[in-house]
Image 1 (cartoon, rainbow, N blue to C red):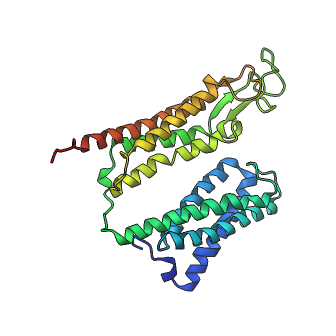
Image 2 (spheres, rainbow, N blue to C red):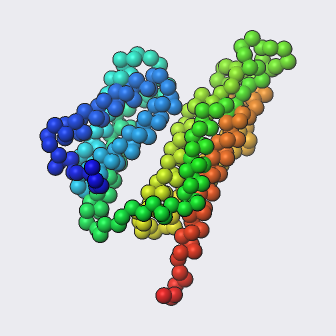
Image 3 (cartoon, rainbow, N blue to C red):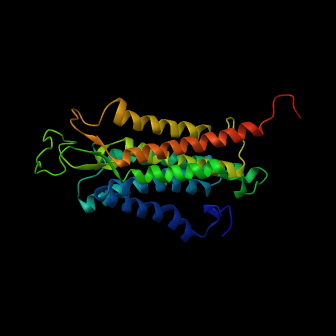
Length: 293
């Protein structure tokens, strides 16, 4: 298979049904099962679904066709997420809207937007002069950004906070009033936060989006790396806020200490920031002053 992939409407009818209807339904069902089993897995699958929405739109010609595919795919995806959730009949690890059918708003609207974007990218790709992908454009900044993203994502599974008592038995010398979410022990970022963990996971995608822009040589109205730098800076600030400046998590934190995951996550966020900063510096050197030929 070459690049770009064939347009969906140019494929055989069985392939259209498989890619346009079966895939979003099956993946939605898998996400629904993961919703009740593992919050980290569910978040990762949702990110993959978002990427799939853009790629699905890229198989359509123009934003209009892409939006239509996103409408169908987002609807099927959301319905089968709820179906998988009902089949497992467990407690959702991520808070669902009430009533649960409102989840479709959060699958249809992004689905339409992402697929429309993918269709627009395909239209621009077909209409403009083709620019080959040049992996030699990947520099030190992108590699540091990749490493920072990997470190940040890995940190979400490490211990971010711990209470004074390591077990419910309140061993001698610990503070029994030290609890987090009503429990004692060690807590990962997934177990601690309800929204920050999702935002940090999404921040990990920034260096890879930057790399795609770099290898394709896209013309931007801003210097490449600027948005990635802001994303890394924002992630670092949020981590510092939720651990130092605003204190430890919880309504009344008592004797809660920072774990290794908090420091590793901060290091990863700073890595993303550094990667964007270095790419920005390269772009600044490449630009010539006005009037210089």
